[in-house]
Image (cartoon, rainbow, N blue to C red; front, side):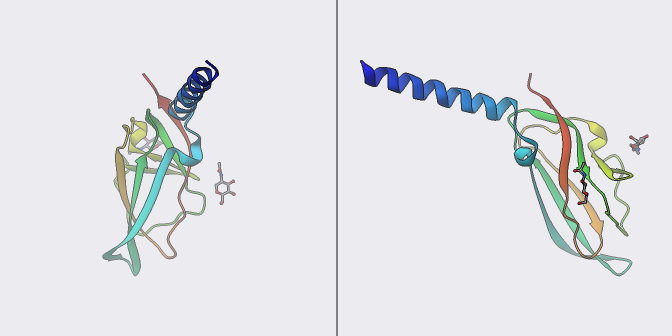
Length: 124
Ligand SMILES: *[C@@H]1O[C@H](CO)[C@@H](O)[C@H](O)[C@H]1NC(C)=O
Ligand SMILES: *[C@@H]1O[C@H](CO)[C@@H](O)[C@H](O)[C@H]1NC(C)=O
């Protein structure tokens, strides 16, 4: 009897944990951001390709990266990367689906450590 309760509470606990991950999805782990150097250069600076992947179990819109101090010699399509002051908006604020990757290019040295600031989860 006791072991059934134990099992049930473990199942319930795991369910809550999973729901927590799906619904809250803390900003630190919400996206994976990777970048790699491309063979191309822009005005003497190496060009980098940045990949931002939604790791959350909900689509994310209004995805903003911290662009404080960001510089680039390569002008990316602003509907993919809209730089406004210290904030970069991805994909015009449109939702980035579960597991979807948004890619953009820039050219500078050293590479810039992009961090997500905020996004709005659409869990429906
Ligand atoms: C953005 O990055 C700068 C420089 O690292 C930091 O000082 C600032 O607090 C960050 N802003 C946000 C909103 O995280
Ligand atoms: C970039 O963002 C600004 C501020 O949010 C907005 O006014 C502008 O229309 C955007 N530009 C493009 C090309 O989407």
